[in-house]
Image (cartoon, rainbow, N blue to C red; front, side, top):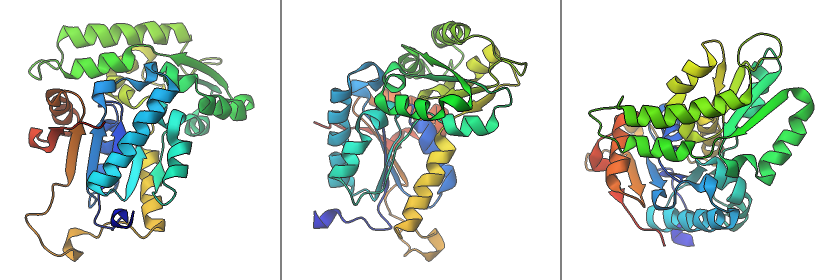
Length: 296
């Protein structure tokens, strides 16, 4: 294990079942511009929200091992609500010295924002039916009225919409499929707005959902606040690295090596073209940063 001891110059690992966690990576890059990141999408097995806990836990362990062995990561952000709910407690006990940040739907931040006391929460079925989420909701039950809506198929549709030709980001295929699902689930939840009894706050409880924010916005109206997890997770990651003395130095204080490693590596267990399309569309990152890997 000695060789795995992280250095300040080591990268931060970020992992999700697919490309949704790129929304978290975007917030991490903004919060910590001097850091290096290795992002791994287990797209061959996505979406996790529709698989069993045991499977998700096994993959989470395998990917943590892989990122430590192959990339010597100094911290891990589990940028997937489902994987966090299914496995983070086990990963913590197997890797006690690794700073670890998980995701849960940002229900507590929503409480600070809502004026009507009515809050909508959307997420995958895996996240919203997990024991971890159940415990969170039970602890907050008397503080607001929550409407919790599993959105079966939505994360998967968002993944697929990325693979559509980049020349046609508004191509009707993506908009009809993701738009129709958003519409079905939002309508099932009830009334959104700022009036009494209306939901004035919507928690995006899956990292993919920020990428259909405009479709959701069209359905719930301009006044409803969206709460997502990217920024709070980036702040927490920074805090943990600071506490561990592992924040990277600004470039001016680093030894100069123009041939240094890329600041971001994007790995996927699925088709590399899909990762390239997502990286370009959502993060303006070039295709050369993406590669296909296999994680047994």
